[in-house]
Structure formats: structure tokens, C-alpha cells
Figure 1 (cartoon, one colour):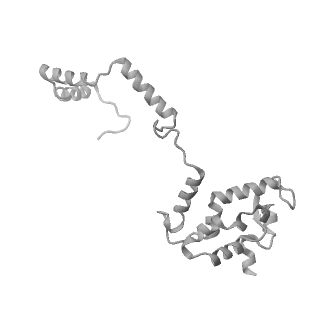
Figure 2 (tube, helix red, strand yellow):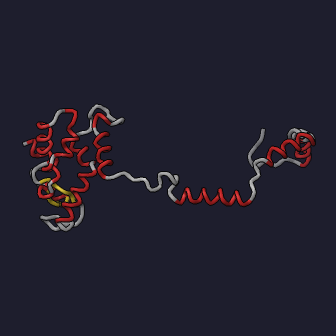
Figure 3 (cartoon, rainbow, N blue to C red):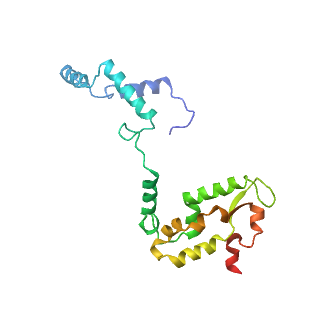
Length: 197
């Protein structure tokens, strides 16, 4: 049995070497070697072609791996918005029966991020109550939970997210204020508290 760190004697090494002789692989005849050589010559590219191919590959990866056909191809904002609406809710391939709460869906929308940034910018990136600049949150003055109830009342079940995008009071920056997390926790509307009253 082989043990780690065990060294073979010269005699054992010679026996191993002799046992492998003649078993190192098939020897080709001269005729076969010529056939292989001719076949491989078809793939030999002259140096100029090789340099051109190398330049094309470098260009391909320098452009982010995009082909020349779609390098300058961009969609308009209107088209992107239409595509976004087309993939909302039940129309999305990843739909699991509406298990995600609407307020989470709203906060994940690009429009919500834009609204949030506008509110923070308007308030100078400071909490309007304590002037803190850390853990800032954009809070709806008229609560988001009540806005969602209004949206649900005017929409059919299958087009709630479309109504969310069209519902102006939700995106009005005058209905927003910048609060730090601690000040936000103290408000009567924090985390849907107004629904529990």
C-alpha cells in the first residue's frame, strides 16, 4: 500500500519505467502523418488575417461585447415606459398570483425613485424636523396606505399598477417631505399605523 511521503527505490522506479515502455500511444505511419499535416494546413491563417481577426475581437469587447448592428440602438423614453407597463402585474412572466404587496411594488418603481430624489433635493437632503443628514426617507404627508386605498377603489383588479402610474396625487412632490428614520418613526402614519387606529 502506498503511503504519503514514501519514496520508491531505484529498482522499483526502473520496473515502473520498463512497464510503461511501448504503451505511450499509437505511432502513426508516415502516410498518416502527411494526411494530418495537409488537414492542419487548411486552418493555418496568414499573419495579416490573424491580426485583422484579433483587432475585430478587441473592438467587439471594447464596445461592451455588442455587435456593430445594435451599438447605437436605443429605445425612446416613451417606448421604454410602454414596455414597462406591458410587463406589469399578471402580464409579467414571473407573476406568482399577486403575492407582493402593492406598497412594495410602488417603492420598486423607477417613478417612485424619481419622486423620492425630487423630495430629498427640494428639502436640501436634510430632515425637515431635526436637520439630520443620515438615514433620510421621503415620507408621504397624506399617507401612502390611504393613497393605495383610493387607487384600489377606482381601479379594476387587473390594472392596479397601471392606475398607480397614472395617479397624480401619488407622484406630487408637495405631498412629500424628507425625514430621518427616527423622526419618521414618530409620525402617526409610519408603517401604515394610520390604518391600525
